[in-house]
Amino acid sequence: MSRYLVLIYDDESYWADATPEQWQASMAEHDAFSRAVVEHGGSIVSGEALHLSTTATSIRGGELSDGPFMETKEALGGFYVIEARDLDHAVEIARLCPAGEGGVEVRPVMTFG
Amino acid sequence: MPTAADDALARAHRGAWAGVVGAVARTVRDLDLAEDSAAEAFAQAAERWPRDGVPGNPTGWLVTAARRRALDQLRRRDGLTRRLPLLVVDDAPREDAERGFDEAAERVDREAGREVPAVFGSDLLRLLFTCCHPALARESQVALTARLVCGLRTDEVARLLLVPPPTAAARITRAKKKIASAGIPFRVPSGAELPGRLDAVLTVVHLLVTAGHTAPVGDGVVREDLLLRARELTGALVALMPDEAEVLAVHALALFAWARRDGRHAGSGRLLLLAEQDRSTWDTATIAEADALVRRALRRGRPGRFTLQAAVAGCHATAPSYEDTDWHEVLALYDLLLQAWPTPVVALNRAVALAQVAGPAAALDAVDGAGAPEDYPYLHAVRGHLLAALGRPAEARDAYDRAARLTANTSERAFLLARRDGLGGG
Image (cartoon, each protein chain N blue to C red):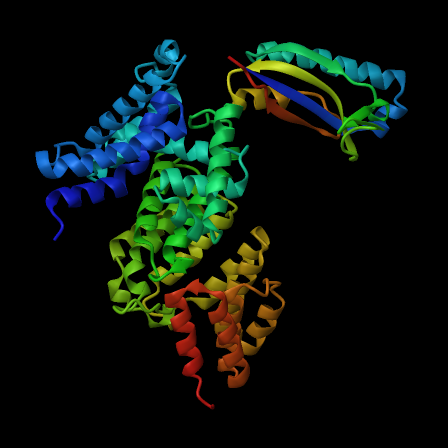
């Protein structure tokens, strides 16, 4: 099994004024995803939801600046680290990951030693 | 004068290169190592076969030699020795889909009287699907397929793709690196994933057919090695998916190109237009086989872009002469193709058919509305042809000149300049 980082990118304007019901629906989606990963023969190593990218601080060349590295319509909103057999398996799992109108990016995690 | 060993080696390189790479890759799961080991095995064969005689099963000899070398290399690498038992998966039970495919491939090979062992077919397809994995950029898919599946050298890949050699090399390296680091599996996708994966594979193989039919650069018109490889690959895909219309169609296109290859150029190497070709040089048995495939594909419902292209190729290949071509049928097929695949190149080809049905003036309007890029040589070649037919030689001459400047194939350039010089009228 290899580790893959599943990055969730979506439009933050949705979350900026989401109602409690919308949050609840999203939580339910992620609960369902967590169960589905196991059903698909993978596992979740870790995962976090992130605060809005307006809370991000970037450091480049020692200089601090306000905001994320790249300003785009879709921002990184959260991630999972999963275990999967190969890229096809990781993609099969990542397809199930809730990302609203946005999408997910799958990146292999480097192993050392 | 080539010896029997040279012949056997050349034949093995044409027919078995991808199979050897594929067989080693299945064992060691490392494309770089598989490629190096295959090259090494061919080098060994070049040294030994003339001395010891050609082995009874040249392909088997090459696979064994390449595999042995790959395993030696792995053993030498630090830290890998203990993982070795995990890497050798040769005798592991294979998935049902693959087993089923091997049986089908074996049947096809037997019927065609080919000596290639059946298991090769699935190694070849595994290699093809790995090179065309959707997680790779299309340009990398093409470069990698040309390199690993067709066995072209990096400089040949570069010429095929019309990019500088360092660019081609970088694309190949980047793609191999992604396959290794992202864990792109070396396998034929299972039933449910297959249709989604197919379009990339068919697009790449179709590009090889096109490049083999009219070499984009170089001196010759036809690249027979590419056509041969495309014919084999599409044949293997048909054995895997006998009910997929677009697969049947791409195989048909490869067969049509193969059947007509000798008619594409005069003895001198000069390119011949369809209208000039001696149809008695065409291989009618292969054309009939391809035509039957097109009919099978057309019966499978709404035709896709490859099915429509194959149907056009079928109209040309089965017409008794250029004049007797059913141009109304060809135009109707292009109308459908333009809906299924609205590209400037299709619009340009449609205009050529339109010229036959509605005359050069209507076709010239269609050409100018096709939206083809100004640096596309065929745009100007077609304009030159239509302007000449309309009795506008000065403009036709300019158009042929531009086309000749833009093409990178010497045979094509000579052809265009001859057309220009044949216009007369000063």
